[in-house]
Every structure is written in C-alpha cells, then in structure tokens.
Image (cartoon, rainbow, N blue to C red; front, side):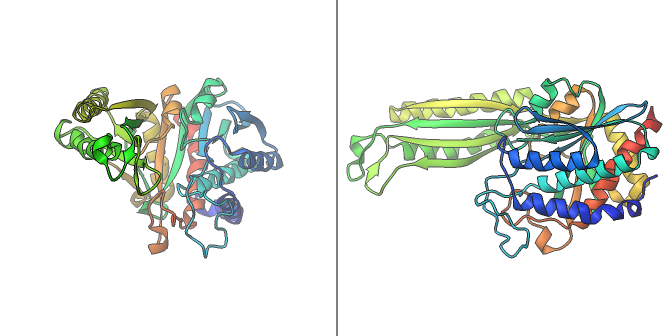
Length: 391
C-alpha cells in the first residue's frame, strides 16, 4: 500500500505549483493562462493531453496496460474576490481575484499525483484520466458539462475528487455517502416601480421599499412553509438600487441562491417566491421580473465509490483519518455530472492547523496548511493503485 513517506519527494513540487497558481488566479471559463500552465506541466511529464475541452478545460491521459479507467478531477478556477492575505509571499497578483476555495491546492495535488503515477507505472495498471476543469464556481452550466458531453470520459468506471476544508484538521478526510452536496438555483428579481423626487415619494412607486419587503418575506419560506425535516437555504446575495441621495429609482435588483435536495422543496420554494412577488406587486401597484435558473443538481456519492475511498483512506492513514458525515453540505458542486455518468465520490480533506488556516471557504483571508497537500497526493495515488484489486 502506498504510504505518505513514498510521496515526500514530491512535496516541494506540489507546494511550488500551488504557490504559482495562487498568485495568478483566473475566474470561470476565463482560465486560459492556467490551462496553458497545466498543459506545459503535463507535457514535461510526457503525459498525453487533450486541451481546450469546452473552453479551457483539459484532460491528461495516462495509459498503463490492461485495467479499468479511473477519473481524477481538479477544478482550476478562482473567485471574484480581493485577497486580504497581504503579507503572504504568494498572494494573488491579479486584483479582484483569489483562490479562496482551494482550487489551486486541488490542481497542485492532481499534478503531484500525475507525476507519481507516470513515474511509478510498475505499481499500477489501467488508465487514469486527469480532469482539470474550468468554471466549477460557474457561470452556469459550469465546466463539467462540456467534459461529460465530449464523450471522452464515457469509459471511466469511477470518478474521484478532493476538496480542501478548514472544518477539519490537516489531512483528515470527511465525506457523506449518498446525497453529499445540494442542488443549486440562482434567482434574479427586478422590482419595477416608478421613479420620482425623493422629497415627494407619494408621486412614485418605491422599489427599495418593495425590495425590503421581498427580502424579509423570503426568509419565511424555509422557516414557515418547508417541512421541518427538509433542508433548504435561500440567501439574497446582491441588492442594487438607486444612483444618488435625492432620487427614488424606478427599479431595484435582487440576486441570490437557493439550495435544496428534493424536487418537492424546489417547487415549494419557487411557488413561495412567486407568491411573495405577486403580493408585493398588488400592494404597490407595481410589477416585477423573475428568473429561476436551475444550475447544479445534487451530488450523490455512490456506494461503491464511497466504500473504495473509505477503505483506501483507512488503510493508508489509519482508523482516525476518516469521518463519515451524517449531514450533506449545502454547497453546490458540478461534480454531480461525473457521478451521474457512472459512479463517483468527492471528499473533504482537512487543511486547518491554526488560526491562520481556519478561515472559511470564500473568505478573503482563506489559506491552507500545506502539509495536507502531500496527504492528498497520497490518497489520489492510492485510489488508483488499489482500484485494480476491487475488480
């Protein structure tokens, strides 16, 4: 069985890659430079690559005799967020963008695993497909769709992915069998009032008042209309209205996210929002525009993939290395497209060592304990090496 010590020679390489990627974050589908850097690294390893799948995703393929095909995914996009780790020597150099969800670490770990696998082919057999995916954070439909639609992954028996997390200590793995990540909807609401002078509000229809009512009432859907044992979240994340202090604007814009697990919850929430908007429309003699954009479906960690990941982690790192979660994450992930294609499992890997590595995902001060990186590489390699024994 692969042990952590066998990977230690890769640690400096993986950290170097993570630092480089952290300094040059790119968002969504606009990851051309990141794509080119990964392609260059794969070419140096002698790994066959298929570039620009979708827009800027790429696929590395290591073929090593007879055996199953396994998919390992890393997401490569960053977030539109200004980093606040100003004292960090590898702080983001792209203003307004940051790897605040750890995709730099995911990519570095997969590059490290690729390097080990290609240099130690005597230890395993089969085919590994290295998936470097754009736009996991969106925009809709996310980067996984083009990769799945390409049919280049149709032969993959199981897919695996790691996601860093400050919720767990360094190197500790955690995941849930079955439903693991929520379905995701984005909603957009334009409230259409009538502009007027702020000193004469009676001569207009104030969309800011309408917006405040909508925001307040949205919070009653989950707390008062959804069955108490269903899980769902409605969060308003953008509010825009007005241009100056003495004008009541003619419109207000709201955008937010909905997370849920069942079709019934989705329909109840959608109907609830529409009912709130109709009520506001009638009360204010106004109008509205409403978009309900279904983005990601629920990620299901399939039983066989979960069991393989679990067994490998216990054998490699010991019985205290793994926690089976009882509750799913309300986060969204387009990893569902891979798991739905055949089988798959995505797991958390802990990256918290101290206060500096305890900031949450999507926080402008997010950072990781890099000791976790080589443990992630070890797990990815072990998933491949031990897979043939299951078949």
